[in-house]
Image (cartoon, helix red, strand yellow):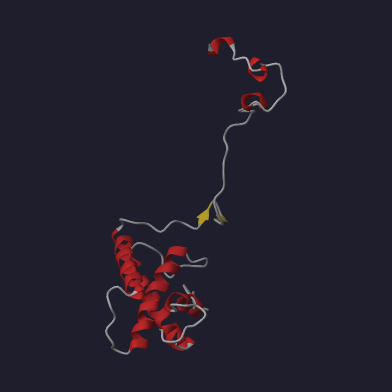
Length: 162
């Protein structure tokens, strides 16, 4: 089974001005024309990036590749839906397409890179925090949270503060 960079549902989500009412937009197209637009977008991405990356990507497809595929596929689906009607340059589908093509040029030229989804064999699923300090950095007295005999707890500043 071929690798799929995006689904018709993902493309419809960016085509519909209101996700609850897809009417009047390319989101109302059937799965076949949207899948054809996805196939065209994947071929475009693979052709532009084949010199720098091994394409097609194996699952999991990098999120940026999914975003690029959705943007380009949405543009092609919108062209199919409009059937030759002029598309304003400020249309969100056109702006998204221009971003995708510009970013593909940056990727193809080596100015930008696609981050790896693998780190030492494990798939990235989010950020992790690493605290290299092992020990008690602060105590309760440092925040006046302990009932101790430190001078400032009794309202008196330490001698070195005066």
